[in-house]
Image (cartoon, rainbow, N blue to C red; front, side):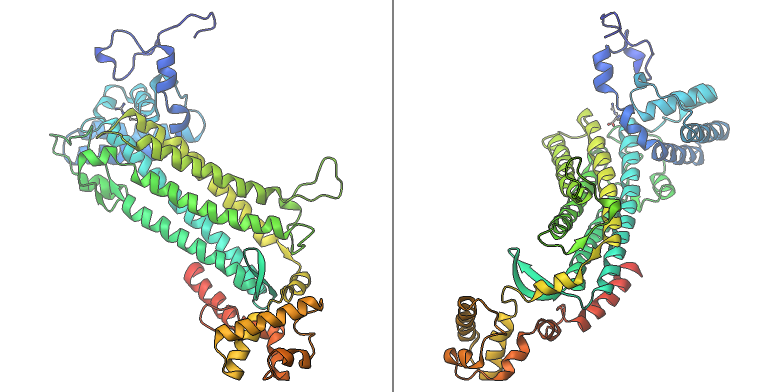
Length: 470
Ligand code: ARG
């Protein structure tokens, strides 16, 4: 609609408009245009155009003069965009046509030769792949930063005992360093997924043209190599319709965000007054407008919530792509916003989480005081009964259960039970059993590979530094 409420046809003669008498209606223009978001592909679009022009030149499909004009024109456009001086026009639909139209303004008719042996279908597939490849590299860097912050805290807390939980019930004592290294492993797998995605993504669609390839004597290896791809995509129909790389990127992001949401949830719980395990610091908390005493873990809560947003992005693209026939359909223009949004979201969440982890002050005394609560060393006692008295683990488990019940009835701990009381349940128990009931002993006894003993965690920190930060 125009200001006076009448419908108006676009007044720009569009690049594909040869057989059209009028321009698109305004609603058509609005639903069709992607420039508002796909302008984020400008650098990749221009890089791919330059590679294409150089290839056309080397195959003598365009003249040296035209190629030179195209290349310097594209450089000027890149500079204009980066200086914020480029005038985007919605009537030119997308970044590809905005760039080409500006090229025509700058160099005249030679601009029309750039689209030889090319289509927007292979153009967008190439530009978007390049963008997602950059996104994967950024994601990997940000994951590494968070791993580094977590490994730093783990190193500080290799021997700080804490209650380990299952079902959020006290299970067995572990060390805080060991707990935090669990997240380092998760993020390591995330980086592995990003690397896998990058490998599969790294084939070049350029030269697939609309869907069928071309009769021009192009060299697809040349463009693939110039853009850092491993090889040209093998099938032209697949090349213009494949968005697996975007789905894989979103899946990777979603799993990262699910991991972050679990850590965020722990920080929310641990920073509560009831737990009091961690102080998150001023940079990542907020006060309440009414309750002066409050310090709310907003950043952690938002990280927890934003996982939902990225899951939504993955769902969106899955649903856009499902059932689409070969090859390109305009539906696929809807692939970009979910990917851009998910990328921005995960990068922000990773930055915030890295800051929060690096600045977290753990209250080790309070955490240690909880480590022995809830009969957390009962398993150690059962293990002792197996080792010292030769009982089966099942019998030892049963006896220990009775001892826990006795301690519960007396409102005391296992360690505080009299030896005679213990012996009334199992006559073979000796004073040595008390040694295994201490939290420190419990933790340092767990020397199995991947276990929580401080000496093992110290080695695990070293290995993590080599594996992930080396
Ligand atoms: N803006 C379009 C997209 O993102 C570019 C490809 C358009 N192709 C076409 N045949 N209309 O998908």
